[in-house]
Image (cartoon, rainbow, N blue to C red; front, side):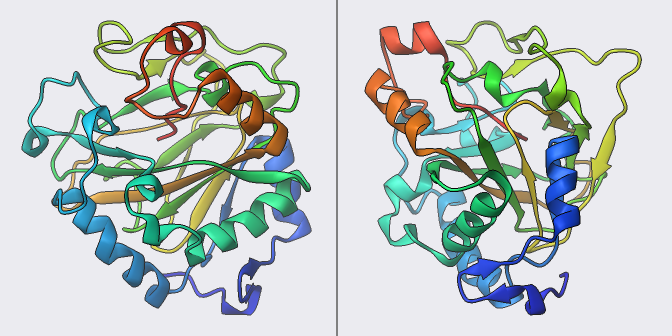
Length: 275
């Protein structure tokens, strides 16, 4: 693990001026050692309880993000748990949430709040455990304040071989979103959206160590490759957005749950899947 204890002060983690500038310019940043080994190990206990189905997650909030909903859990390529803090309330206000909130404020300003959380675990030797290129705003309703800091924490060392995050820098400055289409049939079969790379797009893989995070905004293009190794690639995601945006989402009935039904989903889609 990276050692950045000198940047940790209780619930806070200090972001440097250079890291903030990188986030603003390129749409993402890698922050090292946000959680200590002991802190990751404590969260890992319940993370694995989710994977073993010892913590009940109903309906489509436990699903495979690499295909349709017909697969059995043992066959999933990307185990996806939406809103784990809803189903395991003792996780609420954990050390990762508190420290990530301090990072979101430093990168995006005041008035940021947790919008949703998510677990994504790529199972071993799953070459199809791929997240297509996408921008998170393609999934979300339009709001006046789109500020977003999505923190992606590595529970395992995340490498090119096991499917680390990849970014196309500065796509957050393009004047419009790229066109996105459903990746597996229609949105009722699987929620994943994707878009195509252009010939001049520069792809930057960002391998990170256990306890590190990447943080990305709402418009930067990103995705990840399959897992070609004999181990899991587990990630724990927290998405912080402006308080006003979250209020508008909830008034629309938009909760980021895969169990949401009805006209709201037809109108505005389902949650941003980031990796």
